[in-house]
Image (cartoon, rainbow, N blue to C red; front, side):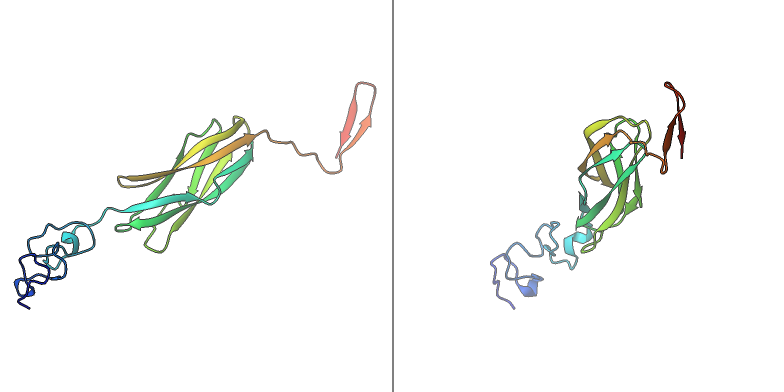
Length: 178
């Protein structure tokens, strides 16, 4: 135990907690790497690694007609750090389009992503657009991730009532029944 196996100037009897790695010893600088670099018994100096996550959509493009909606599943996946709440939002929406998220936030933990349903609703006078690049954002403190949903908005097609009959009344008028 008195031998300095890693030649860092410290032995196990001198509180070298890893005598196989010269970068780990009682006077080493603690870095955020999930290792007790300075042999004080505290990994990473007791600091908390900043939370990080990734963001994805199960459906990244779609079409909606005026007066209807389209949904996509938004997934936040834990990458590192202590789990924290991710709040969802959408921007760059064309006129007449609204975005809602259910739930508005979730907490992804290591090995267990969390999900929210994004609903893009087109009102009856929504602008007709092709491939509008809607920015979907997940925010947790200072960390923000974005992904794109490509939205096409189309005219609504009126439905024809079932059982519709038309009876000519004259050369300029017609009686519709249903």
